[in-house]
Picture (cartoon, rainbow, N blue to C red):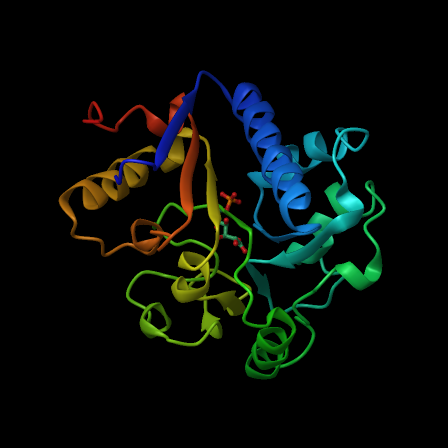
Length: 240
Ligand code: 6PG
């Protein structure tokens, strides 16, 4: 780990959810104070859901109206599909905080993946994201970047990818875009992730980063891992 990277371990999922929501709120407030806005890419999957609900409950303290909402990845499904990352974020966070439609930059999963990727890349523009939220799969994937995939080497900002787990067609930010962000925040919980978390941290320490999650190393930005004990317990004692 680089000196300013942080691996934070919390006793249980509840403490993790509260701390992660607080950290995201702080990133938003700091960035809005500095620049008038915050360009944040939301993670998909199940882990972030209680974090988004907790964040939505903080709307009296956070200027959500100034946030530009992006997505780290999307499944190629319609926006109302149960598998849609947009639908999950809309229901857990964007609708509850009244996010203005014009500030929600959805990946158009209902379109063919290549077309959706190209359109999203245009919408994303060249400005670095202020904060990228990420989860990690039990195989070490993050966003929709899967182990061994050619897209890991892409110099594009957004790519169409194939997931081994359905929905297979995906659109994802690339490592290039993720690593250009001002801050990246992983949220990983549960015993099923423990072995892979330990492997990822060992790869980072050894400098032999093969797994997608291990290759998230913001060039200038801050990297934080928010873990609960059940996901972190196999990590060997972390040398500073
Ligand atoms: C997705 C996510 C993906 C997710 C991991 C972990 O579209 O599914 O972007 O990268 O973060 O698969 O998912 P869980 O949080 O559901 O374990």
